[in-house]
Length: 116
Length: 158
Image (cartoon, rainbow over all chains, first blue to last red):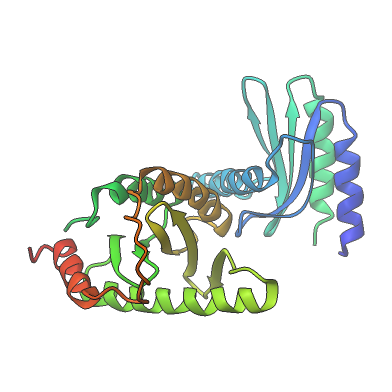
């Protein structure tokens, strides 16, 4: 997969209402491969912490005997962190509370399936 | 075993270790003199790591000056099981270095993130160096004696 489809996916996710940033992150390194974030969003910090969150969710699921993780959703006071990935790569979305998380979930899972 | 020779380094380093989940950590002066450590069990390992870290920093800083006009800020080496991070910290007391070794319990992204916080805390806590008009030698007059003293303090021989 070359860089262009990643950018197209990030752009499409960024256009949703209430989305503040979209990133493609390496789970192992906690570093952003590509990111599109609004001013005031620290992409490096989000990448490091979202990758850690996804990794811990994956390990917890495996320890509980539930297999792989398809999608992680964190609901916070003023917004959401959503992540879906495959192998070492994750798509991460950070959004305000008003965002349509159902639609974002479908798009994230679809985008993650395209990572190879 | 003590974590730090100087008290101002101890709390920021322990917080960094806890947050970033690194296995080994060292704070040292650019000359190679150790100020604090976490995870080492033998003083000889601390001494070797400090000497190597100071040498790596000196080499990479000079390489940065040659290539980019300024020293490189940090260095990351990705090994098969363990990874190494070496970062420079400028404080009122001079240039200090952090050497951290970590495994897959954390990531370079998290280490970099918490290194940024450590840098701020150490810069705020470090005592200022006494100004002097005299030309400063590359190594302190009592470097070796101080190095031995610091290692003895860290490993409970004093």
